[in-house]
Image (cartoon, rainbow, N blue to C red; front, side, top):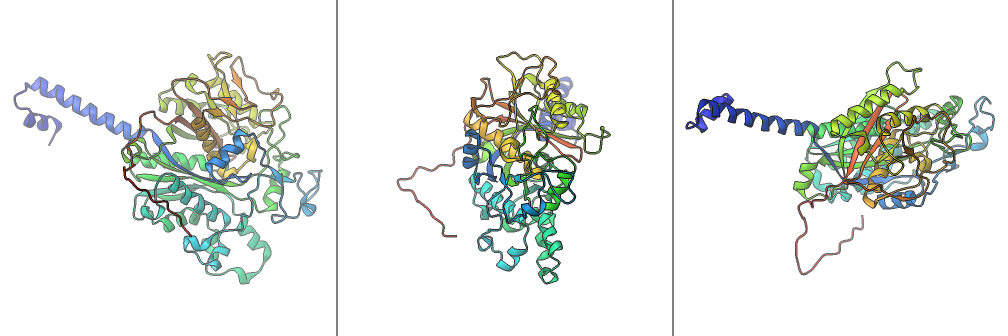
Length: 488
């Protein structure tokens, strides 16, 4: 039945003209609803994480950030022998010019029995899979759900992962007796996402994303799109990275990507490369309307996200200023915002002499114009605290930004003294906060998060503070309460 026929049958007393107007009104409502589904905001309702500096929960991560702690340490002995691989001369064959990294403690430890995994299988499982599983479980609990209760649900998993350094250790050992029935699934990147869905019994889209350093933020973007398309009603999204191979670090050192002092001196005149880091971050996402209806604890709202590609830049791994500006304008348009509404940007900010000027100048051109000294665009990078987490870098920056919004404070950006002289602000008001400061005043807190892969794939997310209206209450009034403990 056509729209006009339907209106005519429901409202026969109206004139043909009024019936036509009513049909147009109803069609507009349907179009607005469809557009809202396509571009509607996404709520962050849960967070799980494992970051350097013993930041194994959002609260611990926030304390590290707020206190301005540097979590970079000398490479632990269980990774590789520094005496064998280090040299202050980066041109020494087979040697790297860095001694440091942002490392987690004891990535070999894993409570396999908790997840119903045998010790023999656990030994073959890449630590990246283990960390992602742990963080996903805790993110679901942080959202207020019992992980076991999600079985059979249309919940998706979108995980950024790029490395296979655990597998490299097997190849180097040349011990064929270690290649058993669990080896293939233990090292496969796809299983890192698939294992989460298997353990939790999830039936939504499940996939891994590899766009190099932008992988985890691209995974978040893909999760948001899947939620808007109705492919899933809830999504787990983020990324993971573990540094186990001296060879990968050696290759980065030979490419002159690594900072000799092991510090990301982002935006600073002394910027001379990054330091590798590891960790994992997982977000639980829902459409905002569903999160409010379900009474979920809304931590922040993703109002828009976008991805694009550098294309033919000055080199295969070189960033593109025009591409970054185009990405920022696209995501602003999708969010229905002006550049001046963004108060803070968590930059990609690796601390390289080439990348920093290109990124800051793109931010200044799109977001920094028309501001005054009292309303500068604040920019920072969590890489100055943790190192570059590669496939988990974007979600680390996003979690930092969400926590900063929740607490109403912007953490200090480390290792910054003098602005890189190659950064031309062209009159834009851009500032790097080097001490803890209150979040700028405004109607709402708005921030951008950038993540760029050396593959050329760029991602940007605009995130806002949680809405003031309260979600539906889950609490039930009762005279007595249970205090529950688990021995698992």
